[in-house]
Length: 284
Image (cartoon, rainbow, N blue to C red; front, side, top):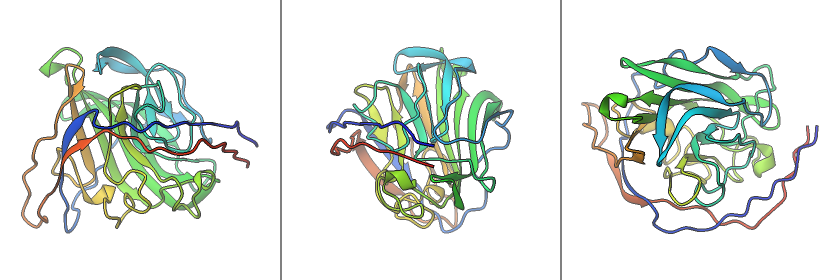
């Protein structure tokens, strides 16, 4: 099976959105971050496919636009207004006009029967309605399942705090691969590795430190997703509060006994990675 050529020009943007990120490192994990459920619907085994427009179950104000539906994309992200089949991650600012929330933007491939499949649906988080997408034990391109990732993306209804307010939550239990073979990777590593963050599709975005850094987000990496957190005392959980359409600065998280001292990344600004335009062809 051949796949379409994709050209992704990327522009470098400076400080567009400052967000103080508090990340807590820990000596050991005592609880899994991924929440149960959010699996009532399934995206069939595929490479680079997306759902049609899916009802969230409540309204969300995302950077001034209210959405009641989203698109679930196989490659570790959801988008608003249209689907996204792009498999090589791009800098989240300026590279697309599609608003995106990316828990792990990389080339997920679930065609191998040893891989899990992408599931999604509604559920409950601490008494609040939520919509979630679960990527449990998913493989990478080209139909590889020797390494598997388990992560989750949730939208949590927080209209109790204001009209159409919500939380974004990323959860990680295992990150063993970072790159598909068509993105310059070899055996799941190297090349253009995964990006984590969000964007309004134009001029405001955030990328988690470690995005695009080979090895950084992997288990045991310098910015390991399972060994850190944002706005949570649960390892592997990253919560972003969206109030009045804007993502709020992170709040400090108390460090429980047995945890290492928190590592604070101050005033991280949105950016994108400039790369030469290039055509990418995938064949199965």
